[in-house]
Image (cartoon, rainbow, N blue to C red; front, side, top):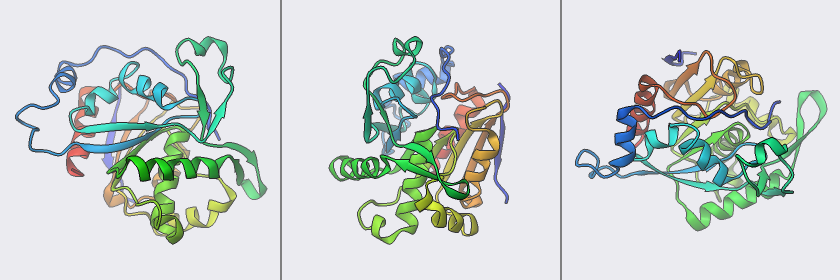
Length: 267
C-alpha cells in the first residue's frame, strides 16, 4: 500500500464499500494482546468518542475498526474507544440486502441532506443528532478526542468547529483536544456556512490525523483536502493512501507507526 505522510504546509455522505481485513502485522497483534505492558502502564489511555458513517451504527463501526481492518487493534493499548449512534433511526431495510448480513440492524444516520441554495444543503435530523451527542458526552464524558469515518468524520469536524467557534454550543459541549478524521468532507449545512468560511480564513487549532484514499469516489481527495484547510497546518498529520477507496483502511507498518506517534503526542 502506498503512503504519503507529511506535515501540512499551507456529497457524498454515502455508505462505504467494504473488504475483509488482512492479517495483523506482528507488532499490531502484540499491541492488541498487551494493553498493559510495562512500557505503557504509566501512560493514561486516551478516551475517544467515535462516530459511524451514513446508515450504520456504533456497533457496526466497531466491527469496521477491529474486525474488517486493523486500525482498532493498532491503537487499542493507547486509547479506549466509545461509540454513539446517530440521532435518526432508520428501518431495518435501510441497507441493501447484500450488506445486511455483514452489517446487521439497527441503522442510524446523523442527517439526511437536501440540496439548498448556492451549493449548500439542509441537513434533516441534524439537531436531533447534536442533542443526542450532547447528552452522551454529559453522561459518559469527558472525552479527549473524536474519531469519525465518512459522515461520522464530518460529524467529528462539525462538533469541533461548533465547540471552538460557537460560544453557545461551547458552553454545553467542550472542544476535543484532537481528532482522527477518515475519508470525510466539510459540512454543507446552510447554517454552518459562516463558521466553515471563518475556519478556512482562520484555521482551527485542533491537532488532527487525517486519513484518506486516492481512489475514493464517494468523498474524493479534493473534498478531504478542503476540510484539512480549515485546520491549523501546524497540528495536522496526513496519511494519504494513493490506492485507497472509501472504507476504514488497513494500515501498513509505517502507517501504524504514524498513528501511534500521533496519539502519543496528544497524551
